[in-house]
Image (cartoon, rainbow, N blue to C red; front, side, top):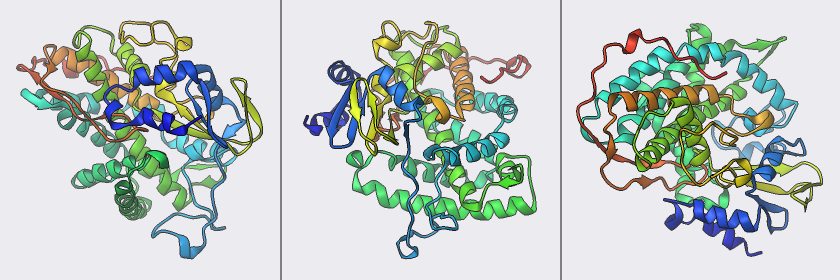
Length: 411
């Protein structure tokens, strides 16, 4: 098989709507061997197996000679690169995820509900006449939320968002990356590590009521996060808590406006349908840790499996009429948050923000409509919009916002 046929799926001309191309590829090759020890997985059952089966995981962290390390690159005492738990196998993954989960609790997420409602209402009320929904709502809301959750000072949040965007652009696999994304991502990571190293030191001396303070103090049977583990965990939370939710909001509003308007669908169902129909995360990868089989195809140990989440979510095997956007349907299965031990720890927060946004848009600006063509970011792993022009009339005034019962996060 010519791997160029696979790489062509992600060409710029297909970015506005890659799904017909995904469908044709999936129907022919639910599992495809692109090259020696490199496979593409697009079928729902096969993708689910890769994400859940302990036969698949991640390569072990590499050892770096001091001369080869980038400035501020976290390494452990033996010289191994420190990775976030998302990129580790048990038992390292289990230990780190348990520590982070003890700090990043459902209760902490639920306590954000009034603040997310307040921010959402303010941002929507500012969208008078023509506006870019991405700069007016989808981008500022998640960065404000994750910054407040972490305890980032207000004055620092603009550069916080800039670093996040630069690092997110470098998440594409090597065959999709543009060389121009590498250097800004490295600089952003260095700036981020330096910034949070100083802020973590401050929180150790003066703890606050925020997630950063909780992560600094968290322990489990005497085990704690090392400085390097803390810093890479914060990087993960930054990107996962900001970029993906921005894309959930933008992709969802675009889908709603293209399919009948904001309407009266239940916000919970809207969120799940957007996650299935146009997932903010389109690709992920795993390594075969031992010889195994996938959809009847032999996969040798050490092989890389590239999982096309966007293609798998629209497999008819996952649910009926997968190419239609139907926010009224009963939520079905999707892989937007992953599966198995790596299921997204921040899923409750993303769902909470999405529910509040879609509820408030439908209630405050039900007449919202498109005002031009959307522009897509030049990334594939994280699929989202750079610009979404919309137009609305005067927002509906509702003084009952603060008096409604608080919406509870998904557990």
